[in-house]
Image (tube, rainbow, N blue to C red; front, side, top):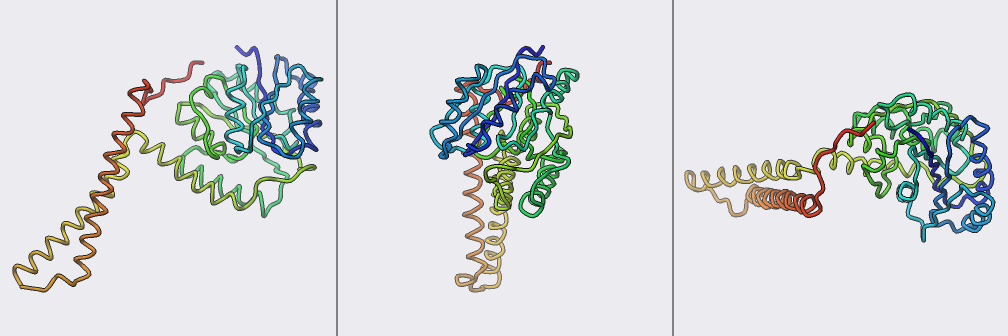
Length: 316
């Protein structure tokens, strides 16, 4: 049962948009939202006066809460701060640049209300109002790569407008720049996800903090996501397989050189093959050791704190 909705908005240097943002969000009653709601704006270390403006606006809006971070940590950390300080049964996240439309919030909540098996509603900016070269093309590439790699088929991983059940956000934490991968992370803890079209407006104030340079960071983050999903609980399989292959190849080279030396009297001391065999043997041994250390660390991580290596299905 939904009693309270938390609307979480991370902002960074959005002083020109912040008043209009709060005004639009406070208009949710007129947009069809029939639940009590709180607005949590996370100021992610703004330096343009956004924090001071928020303090003034907060005095006039009793349901507005401001979480001010001491410096700019990034969107993922700002979202996590919003999750930590929210109290709602349903959590809505959106950007603070006025490109997301608060009118879509009641629609997202209705999906969660009428579909008890759904844990996460992801927005899809079907008619995206951004630059094709700097924003749309990198985003299309990133969406394809993430969908293909994770197996979670969504058309818009980068849309911040999402709706979550409280039970879901309590199952994971966001680090680094993992906000783009929230659907993949949520699926890993058993969440059922649906994607719906949402409105998108052109940016009228401020400056975008994203660009084509983020594509490389997305790929690096994706490598971590895939590694953690596959090998977090069995690191020996990640490092041990490669290590064992290299070690076996090195030992076979040594065996070959041994027979050449014994049977044919060949000179092997200066041969590059000997160096390659030594290198493969050392690297293989090191990778096996790293895998074993990883197994020990995983047990240290789980056992003293009582963490479980499995997830129970979310309660509906």
